[in-house]
Image (cartoon, rainbow, N blue to C red; front, side, top):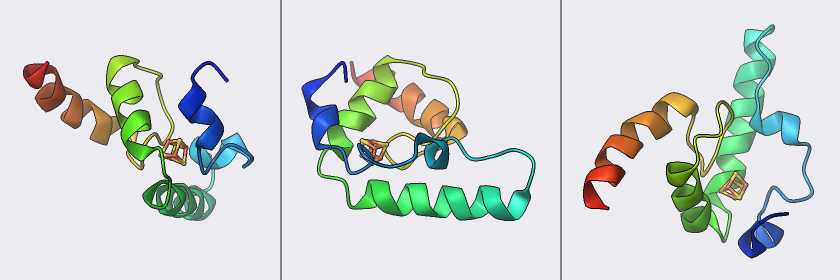
Length: 82
Ligand code: SF4
């Protein structure tokens, strides 16, 4: 992993696909999103993950418990503080 904090991530040993929910089945997509967000809520490096996601537009997926659309809204506020 590129950043040291990523080694402490709750998602480090999980299937990355859970954090990039499937498009084709809404039920599976919802289940994956709930699991990803729940994992993020208990992650020790969520703040680091949030900062990273604000600085790097990674595209889709769940980062720091936030969807792409949620991160886009946070990024507006976050960029004004920087
Ligand atoms: S906050 Fe979520 S996506 Fe970020 S490192 Fe932790 S578990 Fe992974």
